[in-house]
Length: 375
Image 1 (cartoon, helix red, strand yellow):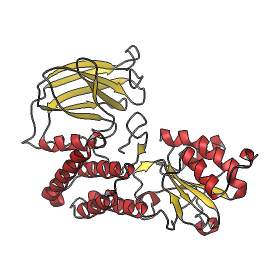
Image 2: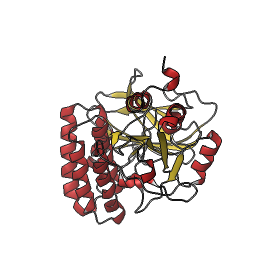
Image 3: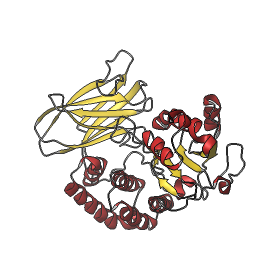
Image 4: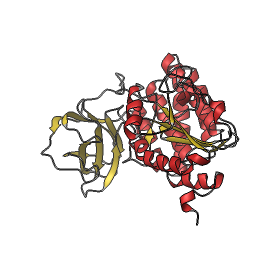
């Protein structure tokens, strides 16, 4: 899975079923490693100032104008990379850019000199790792720009999008999972920025990947199609199908006349778990007046959400979203979780991101103030 962890821009966890493995390098791109370090993070190492997790610092001399690829790989912990200049100014950071759980930073050096590479972890675990620095290929430079898409100016974003379109056209049927990852990152960033072209980009990418000779990559086109479907939900009905944790099918028609929060989530998703108390508070305040919650878990097994809900004493229904033709996450192109979709009494969607204070605001609008808040 490609995920946008809480420490990264946006504070979201991203569900991307097109996660990329370690990038493949062609013979023409392969170059001698400029740096290779095999070491270990230990409990005795100092804490990183950003992640607050154990860390080690390595230095590397870069040349101005050159583009470098920094990879951190570990089988013991969820890799997290940071890059600073000699003065300690952060230049870049990455969690899953090398394909979960490995990190990658692609960086163009602006000055000659020593740079600090900070090796740390997202999950706080320690263990062995390998750090390498190489010159980046043309394709890897594009990947680096795609990864930093949210930080670029509108003009630069337009240039990257156009370059990516040309890149996809040149590859034709040879598109890979790595290409899917770049496409998802850019389309999703446009979506959360409320860009007017986000839906159009999802539509274009759906057509592009449907032509891939790789069946798995071609299958991801359906998620882009689903994202288009989701983007058009506001003001329109939503249809929910699937089986509850007890194996029985949900009767979506029975929710007509109620205000319903459809919450895509997983037990491994930090922001999802963080949002649970807010949902529970809203449920307790508004349930008696027609507010319901339907969770849709994208966990790997239904035992995980079942135990979580039992331990937390969560009273609402939860579906277990299995991959395949009936996946609600695929059908609505849910690339990120939590994805909280609020439905009014007429069965029409009023919000695609009803979380935190926004959920309370919308419930007051649709149902009225909670009894405890009335004077």
